[in-house]
Image 1: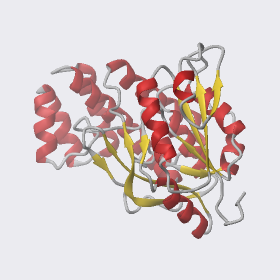
Image 2: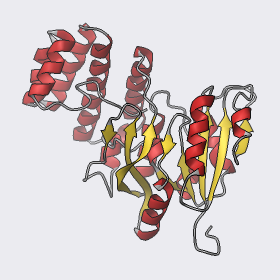
Image 3: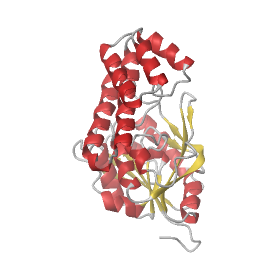
Image 4: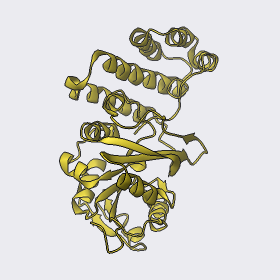
Length: 308
């Protein structure tokens, strides 16, 4: 719904759960957007209106759940209240660069058949992740193989109609954005702005959180089994087990489970590099780090960032 100047309204939905210090910065970044028509909806999932003092300092529509219902329930409630033609989901510990929405609105408005625009991102510790030049257009196979990073909820801007087609957002602990990307990729084409327009808070490094991502990925492979061809399924499972191995070895010097995971990776990929990493894993985390460096390793093998 454009205004008299032709600018569409963008709805920014921010679920929050006991992170008021980060939420304040996230909302400041929305207020600083160069795109003129933006509405912001904050959904407080604390169950006790914990974020109300922060919300009252900003021009936002504030919704407080009476009880904790989870991040995707909060996102669903926010999208249902949204009036914009485009929807931006923003995690409460992330921040948007000032040009983020304007650049992506322009991209979506000028590219036929594209319903999702994403971008690169940086982390608070300085790490930078840019889109793969080939990760555009029909990206369903990439989404199924968990190979769209840094396309995550905060880097995406999507047409409202896509959310209408998938609401309520499914609760997939450890893989909330991965399932959403599969659903979007079934319905539209993707494009990206080749710049880091999102700053992400440092991801949780706990073993429990890492294993939650592993379980979430496996659930997606099961849920969408009819969409996978054998090669894409092998890529997805190899990526999933390599991810868990990297997190296990980041948490301890040696892990039998990590060795077993990398054995599965070697079976599915059948490449010299995957076999070398399996051999290196017998020497624990130092061996994998050295082997990955010698082989020109990926982020997954060396404990790099992963999707939420």
